[in-house]
Image (cartoon, rainbow, N blue to C red):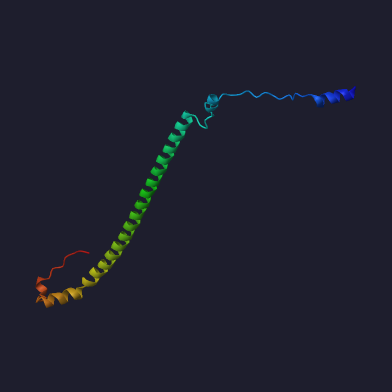
Length: 125
């Protein structure tokens, strides 16, 4: 009997297949695809990107202003040093040129004579 059952399995003319539901061609084109991002998420991404761009440009602008300010401070510092050196040199020249001998020499060149009766001592320095 087992032989008869085996023969029936092989001898069956009808092959069992699973039926696949047929989707009309119109519905296949309308098949809904899942979107990667919703419109709200897209809006938030745009807002985030624009804020990020805005803040980064503001930071770069402020950093540029700070660099310009530091450069100006350094140049002013150099100008102060140069002016201080010039003032020191000029004060040394004033001391050299205001000696008694030099003043007396200039007075003689201009034709002035020393008259001790007209000399007055002025308290000062």
